Length: 332
Image (cartoon, rainbow, N blue to C red; front, side, top):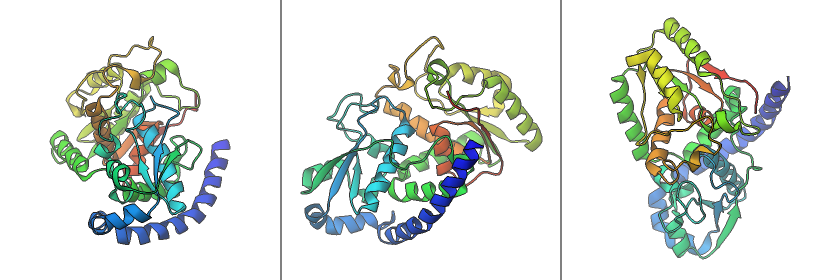
């Protein structure tokens, strides 16, 4: 009942906001779409750097937070600043986090994967802009919520369009994901996607995060779905090697995975956040593989997933699924 009340409140609020924001997005997209906004900036860049206000946004309160935890919190801050007529610049460079490995002299890791709003880069803004401010990005700003978004079509549509226009995935990443998918599935579209979270969720049971299902229960549900819909392949994604082994043993050749460059050995006795793992911290190849997994899952015909930030990203990036199953087991 509580969740239904929250859904209804969100629907009322977002239906009003949605029409206004879509109009803003449509106008912005007409001027700054992926095909012409770079050329627009190049023609006007010196004027822009002298006259426009730039806010460099940084999330300083959670250096070991996960990939899409950062992304969603940044989406909320981008939305806030854009509504105030300010150009936001997303920063994962100038403060210690799991993606720059504490090295603040490297390139901005965010820009390896996503576009900045209007295609300005952190480096050139720091170098040329005359009106720079710093903004501490926090979770209190309106953003995608991994607990509630899955059944709210208005929210999914809003954040799908907003993310695509202002914080879209780099074209080269999308192309690479498509190449991997074609190799894995032999150009088939009859694919069931499965996403599970394990490791530190099972070990730490982080407060206010979604409870994860038992792998054995998910295996039964995947078996049922596969028998009913006769998929060509099952694409499975998890960071947990023990869960991966269970699924591989059960489904064999039909199970397809896109594994990272390193295996993450994590025992349920371990008590640390997965991003602090020595093989993950600062490993941008691992982060890239994770993003590729999420993109491929978002293109599957049907989806089975636990609730987590990665699952919410799947729904935001997707153009929709035929059938969905989401494990709603409460929170830790």
